[in-house]
Image 1: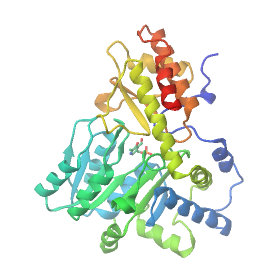
Image 2: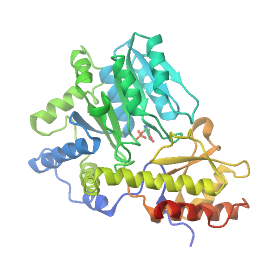
Image 3: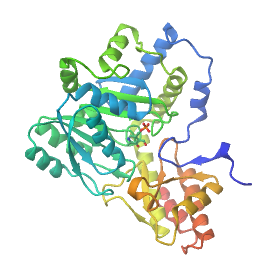
Image 4: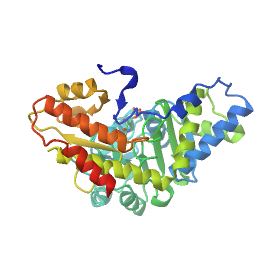
Length: 384
Ligand SMILES: Cc1ncc(COP(=O)(O)O)c(C=O)c1O
């Protein structure tokens, strides 16, 4: 049977496949958001979100994709002319620069080659060169290149220089270790459709005390919908949101967060790390090379370089024909890499299937690779 759109395996870096429990929670008869029942659910969601984000700081949820939370971070913190050190090693870290400039900030870009990680020493040197920088932006897990930047070490340097650190944790929160309070992230944002296992449409932001000091002193915040103080005011008044809540998505998030907490933080991170290792070993055994710098590979997705014999469009179409959806590269990496995500529910079954279909597609396209070597390498990781 040709691939069935309704039953495709999403191995893409968001949206990912969701558990039936999440769909069931979303399909319940909708409450009104201005009711005690809904407010209770929403308050529980915020409290579970804090648990999953490993924070005691304030957390707010916006009806908007992850980028809404990125925009909220900049709009609420950065004033006209403020200098922002944007750490850039891919498409999503580059977005911080674009948003900074949109809100009148002066971007100081620190760019490294896509596929390489940002090193703490580079950040220290850039801050020494630019002492008047007020904020630093970081994409913890750069989804366009599958590079995990050293968030903890970078945060240490940023704190030593007494700057405010704004972090995108869209593909790390809920899948890898992220300890914002302990590490010193002042703002941490994430989105619903990746490791959190909920459909797209919710953006979350954690705001720490040092960020609040700045936000509270702003004369004017140039955003109406994403004005963080208004979210704080409404939540404190009665677990409410200033505007209509995304009711079904909040029910879905409530269920997916409950599932994350049931699994346990450590177990979940370890599972993601095990899956990542299996994908890395499996694809290397098939003859591929990884894009990410050694030692900085993401644990929630893997970016794999194409050998010159394999054409991106044809390869991914072949995979899709067998019911497995993977992602291509972005910007100048288009056609050069493909990306396989291992987020949320992904376990042995999905990884072995994806590697087997990868091999089948490659062989169908005439690429020479050993028989069963990808699956076998992954099995070794699982059995270890
Ligand atoms: C690291 C990272 N940041 C930001 C975004 C943008 O999120 P959204 O598409 O939900 O607005 C993504 C989405 O892929 C991402 O992976």
